Structures are given as structure tokens and as C-alpha cells.
Image: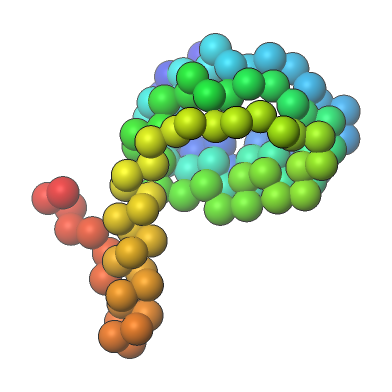
Length: 102
């Protein structure tokens, strides 16, 4: 059901009573989890097995998610490289995105 989803942005944002087990979702093609659980006040399930190799942003994924307290051991190499590129670009006064060849 979720195998071809590219973005999960805002999916449960502000959900005050959502607390279902979604650990089995296929997230390998997802590029964004931005604001996915932002202000989701009840969610607290383990997501540590989610595939994250295609992610480019997790901006504010759990911001103000007051119940979430799980450890996430995700490899986020692409996010780190993009972040470093943006910081260097900001210092140099221009945006430096990773090339499409990477």
C-alpha cells in the first residue's frame, strides 16, 4: 500500500488521537517525512525499521509531538550531505545541491 509513496509530508500533522502501529509500512522510496508527526500529541510507536535511504528531508518530523519518545537509528547519509552542501552554500552565498550523478 505504501511501497510507491514518495512523500509522507504532513500526514499525521496535528493528529491528537492517532497512535496506530505503522512500523510495517514500506518507506524505501520516500524522499520526505517533513512535518509528518508535527503536533501529533498521541503517537508513540517504533519506526526504527523504516527504510530511509531515499530521504532528503525530515524537517520537523516530530516537532511538538509530545508523546513520541522512541529511539531512531536511521542512516541518513543523503540528508547529512545535503545539509553540509547547504551550509557551505550559505557561507559562500550560493546554494550548492548535490549533483544528480551522486
